[in-house]
Image 1 (cartoon, rainbow, N blue to C red):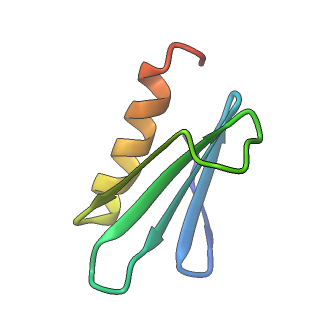
Image 2 (image 1 turned 135 degrees about the vertical axis):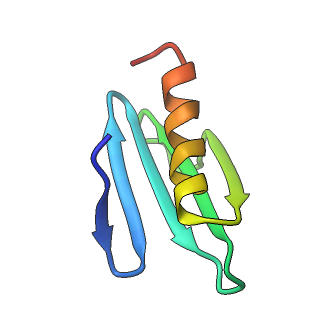
Length: 67
């Protein structure tokens, strides 16, 4: 997946999914995955590092079986 930076946040898309990663303010990172242009995320989580948050989002998308 190719991540693009927008402000402090990062975004990537693959197939029907859009992944967002953004800092929380306490040093941790939120990740969200949206599917099929829905308003609510399909999956979310919090990781202690940017790399961990990106990896979690990518793994969710790969394991979904839809890509």
